[in-house]
Length: 216
Image 1: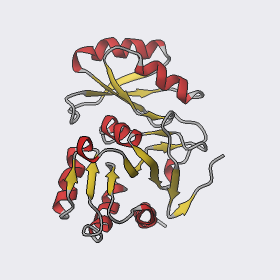
Image 2: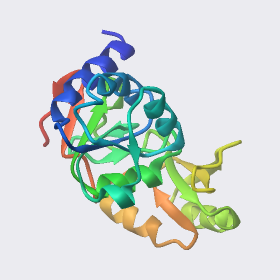
Image 3: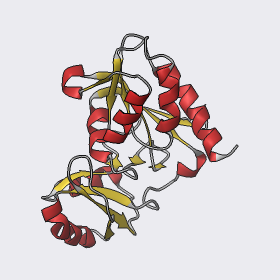
């Protein structure tokens, strides 16, 4: 089964978590691009969707799905998104698509976070994928120096401005043995908007290539 087939199977299974007459949180990325056309087939059954990025909003609207603001929708029953890495405890690295801040907000506002991955995203230890950090532009160099003190090698993502007006530092060289603690430490650095560690709010359900995983 190739990667696209794995993503499609995961997207198909994720539809089981979409309830009629509810608002669905929708993430960003290549796997979600398989999910949105499936969601469109039920667009008259749901109230609409809350989107984690301008790119996702455009795709949802292109499929005729109503897009609501989170401020108007309130808490959501489910948020469906992908990940760049997922460990055996369902802690994640996200942010490859530069939407990590809005993704984290919607995940926090959702009762259930369903994460869709393919086999390549499964890891025992987070950190092989560079950890994205969204930063206020004026704080870029300051934040980078603090990250070096934590043992990482931050690299500015070129030609990338987030939907929030931030920039992305991709941090290489981290072996993340304590994800919750590292997430808290990075969030405390002035100028950080958000870090792509989803450890404090990890996934509730992980679907890999169409199969439900069991948490260790």
